[in-house]
Length: 152
Image (cartoon, rainbow, N blue to C red; front, side):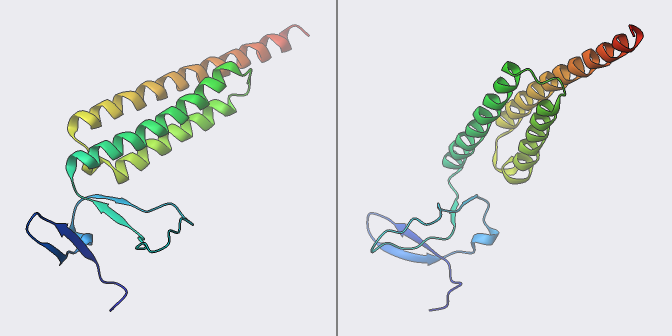
């Protein structure tokens, strides 16, 4: 049996059959299993393609919500820190842009318009808040340095 063959198992009430599909041509969410998870007497899976639209939507929501929570925790830690240089805010802005680009490239074609708009609103709110805080820090540093020189 060639290594590169792909099969799809279909289970109906009446019969069980194995059907061949071209996964590269199907629209769906590709998922790879966790590494180093070995189970005796089980089939090794390298890649799984989820085709059911409702399940795909739920999986994307779970992944994006997890990433949003991590991003929000990082931003909350920034708010509590006393960083005067703004490096943390720049790093957070880079993470927001990274999340936006990854989502556009991987998930946008699988998401509904409503979910796309909601995601864009969330990202734009985070980005606007970070930009505002970064500009406030830079402005305060400018005035502090400017007035510090004049007092000498």
